[in-house]
Length: 551
Ligand code: GLC
Ligand code: CA
Image (cartoon, rainbow, N blue to C red; front, side, top):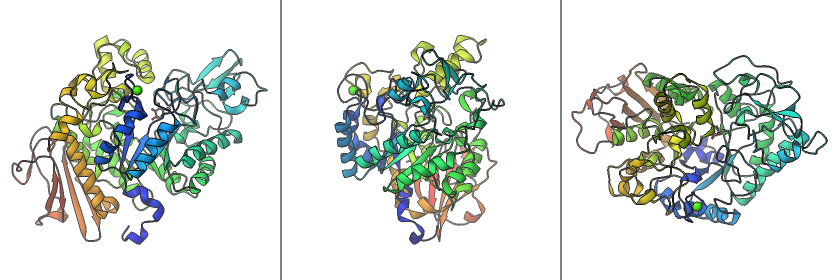
């Protein structure tokens, strides 16, 4: 990208930053202990104050919550616990007035088993919804990702149904044209209301190989994945959905578990250009393999390799969706940073990804440095995949050890109520919240950080504003320096004659800065630093120090 003329109009999402809301834990507006759209409405000014330009709502539809919203029982409605369609429209209109876009989660790999389509489908083979799901007399050997085998016997129908995720999440049969029409009708429903796009859940899984052949062991608990990841008709189906999107001014962001750069490029730049951005996972595996439950020590070199691979591969072709936290991953400070260097590592981690090429996403609570919760018994956890992991692996280890594994890996770690202030329940609700509040809320909360100029919160604001102010930081080329360095992550962004140098120390000790060749003997302007006091020495970085220079 060299001039603004190359920046197509349709690419407005490239200039944006997004805030992700996982509504149940965001803000309770009606005092029942559950986050809702009344709470969201009250906090829209706060979200806007971060400098972001859009909101992604994790599912807010009716759901029995076997997977907290990702098991949908009605795609064209709002979960009564969260409000109703009128309240949603209020939120949408107010967000638009504030200049923020709103994107919805489109979860169409599966529904809830309580969705009327499934209730009908299980009644028998003559039912009009019979082929909405994937039924077989005999299961194949596939594993589900959340709960044992991928097939569950249904007594009513007398057959097995496929579920790649939990038992209560039967997979839709996307080969059925009627199902695809339903998807398009769901999209139109929300687009007609005024939403601006979709985050498409596990979208690379929706087309299954004909005949559903047995799978080879692929990864722990993922037998069969090679037969449904990037399946045979995926691009045809996504092209149909793309057509709908093209009737509106909207964009599509696909979530792609285990996606490689090669397959991502097929989605982003292939003939159908079926997606605008993809959430990839490589960089979330710098301390684990496949899922956080398969923990290994954090490796900065692995993290950098993943970042750089995606930055390089997509440059000038596709566009990255940048994130380091969401509702599926434990909190990043507790993983790649240090709880002991909470403020320093929280701010440094922000710099590490917000200035890469792509559209940044910030997950609720990330901007105040929320950290993992430590619960004392497995019974206190509510996430289906955490429970399965606990009950399936490392059974010979002590309870303490297994709980520690859950503590570092559970999705519940990032699903605790948002910490608004130091009043009871962290200001999230006037009632007992539906889930545990992290006991650190007296220190880690929005109100306290609003008052502190050096807080993580205010630092996020500065980062977001800086990115937005510069075409170089938005469109510039990315180059990494010293990729093998074990403590420092150093990259630049270059456009025309302007350069930004971004330096992040992942060390808990002071560390000597390294100056990459193009910068030797030149003095840049220090435009951002996460230490407000004077640097130790110009070429020494303090623990978890991050600096951004402009040249
Ligand atoms: C996606 C969602 C996750 C959900 C899964 C199944 O990965 O982000 O929360 O459990 O899909 O829908
Ligand atoms: Ca509520």
